[in-house]
Image 1: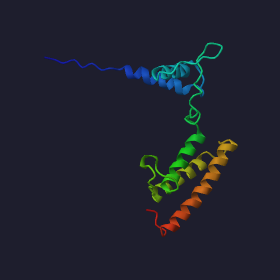
Image 2: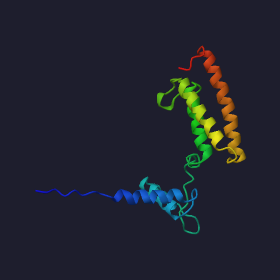
Image 3: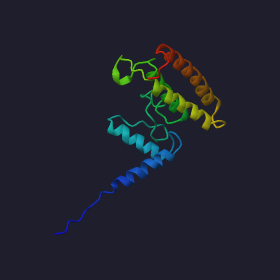
Image 4: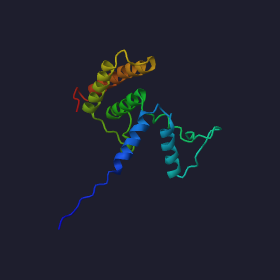
Length: 154
């Protein structure tokens, strides 16, 4: 008796649709709007439409812009992680508990340095200022924490 295997390849269509969404400029295009519409309806939110009848993003979520994938948000997320590992702010999963890890902080600072070097002459003035100023501040905080721990980056 032979068993015939059946493979569900529906996921390929889903991935192709998501790739199309990512190709659209931020917040633009019919595919991205369809996805937003679908997300709103699945979350029970009423669809919002502008006077032309096309769906518009909900203004109820002030973090929508903060969730946009761009260079500044990526750098900011790395900065936030460095601050956690330097013990400057509590880990979000650990409540108020401080989880200092200077090796991890150094790795992330080195990552930011590499990004600065690799993106040289490709950043706008705001991105460059964010990266340069943050690197300086993080390096100073790292040295302070290293001194507090007796020079050991454990």
